Amino acid sequence: MLHAEGLKGLIIFLVVAGVIVPLFHRARIGTVLGFLLAGVMLGPHGLGRLAATYPWLGYVTFDDSARGAVLAEFGIITLLFLLGLELSLQRLWQLKRYVLGVGLAQVLLSTFAIGASVRLSGALPPAGIVLGLCLALSSTAIVMQLLIEQHRAANVTGRIALSVLLFQDLMVVPILFVVDILAGGEKGSIGALIWPFVAALAAVIAIMLVGRFIVRPLLRSAVRTGSRDLIMAITLLILVVFAVATGLAGLSVALGAFLSGLLLSDSEVRHHIEVDLEPFKGLLLGIFFITVGTNVDIVAIAGDAGWILLAVVLLMSVKAAILFGAARSFGVPRAAAAEVARLLAQAG
Figure 1 (tube, one colour):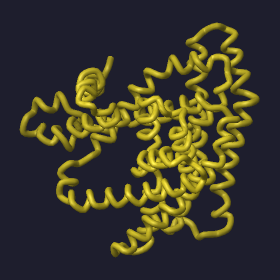
Figure 2 (cartoon, one colour):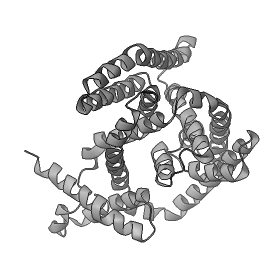
Figure 3 (cartoon, one colour):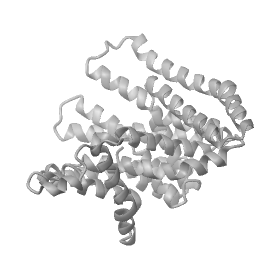
Figure 4 (cartoon, helix red, strand yellow):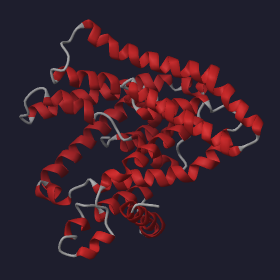
């Protein structure tokens, strides 16, 4: 039997997905923004703030945004898994110039520019380095969901955006390591410097080997049974295990999900997997965006709205300029470079 609070949250989410978001669509508001706005309005910092005065609002608002955290994260790894299914190792290798070129240039230049701006604003070290490293990254969920909705994930803009986002995921390990050093968690020894990279590289190699010699034969044996339920169960097991493996290695769980999809991209049941998972991906991502929205405190933002707006405009302007320049320097057409700059200018 479902717990009353969990059932209430599920009903509210289904109303948002089936009624409120379609109404936003009619007002030309996209799905991502629609879910975010719904989360803000129905979250504990929105109408939920008035529940003490008007008790009936407690029945139509989210009172605990953490309840959907697991499903929200599963939505992100499902999105990256499906993106991996649409690629192949050969096509990914063709993108290496943009992953290591545009991605590396964007992260380094954005970190320097943001860090210098924070330092000039009067913040004490190491605030500039930490904020520069964190804000240099972008939201994979938002960018790729927008591109998928607009059927542009496979064109030039989609490929360049994915390349940069993949490099940003690979930067999770060094960013966490640098932040830990600055916080005094490590002494800066050579072993402490090398170990995170060795562990991350070992995790990726292990995933590729397991995928080649264990996962593919396992999936082929499931295909021979003719049971789509068994095929989907094994697929979800592969997805979760690979995501957890990269998470334990200090990498992004989204990267593990992407690699698992990449390994299954040439399997004979690829299209069946895509068809079965596609509807759930949209709903799970909806939970993610609503969860993000419920954490937005409108009152706190309103108190410093001017400074926040100025900071957001400056951040997006700086990142967009860097992304455009980096993309153009590696031969990306002007229109695609401008589109990638606009998409990735936000901070994830």
